[in-house]
Image (cartoon, rainbow, N blue to C red):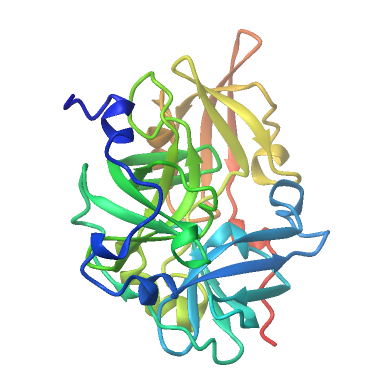
Amino acid sequence: MTDPSNPQFWSTRLGSHPEHDDVSFDLDTVLSSVVSLRATVPEDAFTAPILGTEREGQGVVIDDSGRVLTIGYLVTEAEEVWLIGNNNMALPAHVVAYDQESGLGLVQALGDLGLPAADIGESLSASVGDPVIVAGQGGAEEAVNAQVVSVREFAGSWEYLLDDAIFTIPAHAKWSGAGVFNRQGQLIGIGSLYIQQAIPGDEQIDGNMIVPIDILKPIYDDLLTLGRPSKPPRPWLGMTTAEADDRLVVAGLAKRGPAMRSGIDLGDLVVGVAGEPVTGLSTMFRKIWALGSAGVPVPLTLERDGRTLSITVDSGARSDYLKKPSVN
């Protein structure tokens, strides 16, 4: 059986946990760079209704100063963050940055974690069939042998787009912020989502979507000094859009967000941006972002109850709606 689109191809080749003789590096050292992360968010935070006020996930130590890379939704608007390592040490941390375009977040441990930093690799070289280790905090018992099954564009309904997201199977139970390492023991990505269609096609194959590490490299210095990339933010509509039967349906509206204030309703169909037709999420996002930076008017063509409407949304910056990190 040699068809990678068949889930049995992978299930016969995947073990449960990494073993020392499977890799060419010190496995314990690599896995010790992964920490557990717990964040508390105020009840009145903008993201609290969707993401909750108590968030748990993982992160990866990426330098000797105690900086930890994680997935950004865990620490967005967090007022308290704790990190716990394999050495059972628990330390508070503060949020350094959250990049809305990549979805990555950085936190700084407030003390010496006593843990090794991960070696940063290159995600650009990741390709279908590559073996990887997806790891949560807890050593080999919280790590699984996995394989890359797809590298492709990913469009999220919440105004999010990655050009080269990495998809792996089997799914890790603690995917949020998990470290993804290649067989040289190098960090090539951070776990983001549980996906039921890891391989393109009609068949459900559970896996994880991974944010590639290469996205971090050009913005890392900006994140440390500014808490965000230095370029102007993209226009944000505050509109969740779902793809259904080749149509774009407004499925959610941020309270008091630009789209809601402009009169867009749940159930509206988005059929055009700036006079050009759109049929897919990625096309819609790119056309909106091509209009300019946050604040630019975004002309939308909608269908509602069989009628065609034209509504211009005065876009905003998503960060303006979020509580800012406070450094202790």
